[in-house]
Image (cartoon, rainbow, N blue to C red; front, side):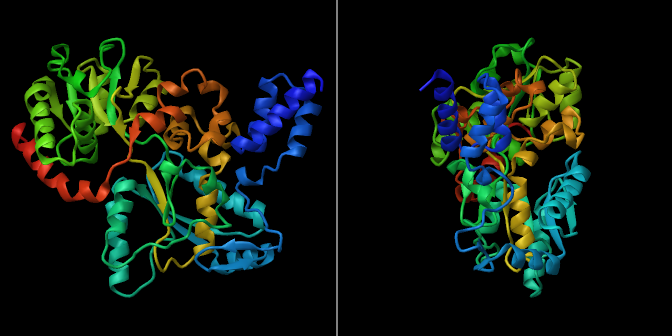
Length: 430
């Protein structure tokens, strides 16, 4: 075997193992110095359907469709899409929302030759989704949403309801991209993560506060009067306390140890705090203007600031670790459009939506708001050239996700967070 043949075979094997899509194979082939004909051979030898947004038809000519619980031919799925006609999704307020809506409609038209409507309801208060869902179910009506995409804690709250409010829909032949997602981001059969890096943490100026490496460093005297943290009660405040417990070697499920953690925050960190706020604009201005050196907020603030010209803004991936609060997609019970719901979930996990191409026309800031990291190894080759040098300063690597990020026991958290926050608020005079 020639050296060229060996490189081609190695790429074929790598693409198969890592479930590369067409775009990733081409990018990897170019990086390896392969010519176009050689890359073409790899593409021809490698099935890439599992990394595209289009479901793969089985040997019997059908696709197994969850919720409806039956095998359906592509023509039958198309007919069902025509019958449903629309899909309702509750999600966050992204700058690129209009583009997301237009691109999904375009995708369905291109893939199934059907015109549909996407009813996209954005909010920064996902609890309103649950209120509307519970109200509808209480009155015996169908769900107002087909897909809910919200932070993991809202999924956990819905899971805890005495009567089931969400569908078991995974695995599904309509959602093959779910297989590409890391196990720690997969809550099958009810939900799949569409974000990988969502985490409350510390955003800081790396030139003014280069010593910040861990949660306990927030007690450093050099931060006196130069720190902003979230108000007690906010999820980012909860993330701060959980992370601090990790740094102190404490178990947040042990009442005495959690009290010790909060006492450390009150006695050692509180004296450094200039202001407690949950307003991101306030934090942004205080950090930009040099009034504070660090703020406690979501990781996304760091990359948004960096791409807006704040070159010294960074996110502290704590040495002891921190907790994930990612977004998950789930389908409520009695969702009126279950086929389009699953098609939307699969599309949201596709290469194009996870790493929007230049053809979407999204500016770098809104792009970084929409992108929330690597859901699994098959996405690694998709980081755009304009962000490659800095991407992992703001997003965790797969290794960091698996070793330095932790999952929250949400039922336990929900049961005890109130008492933690009451004690914390009293101790800092809030």
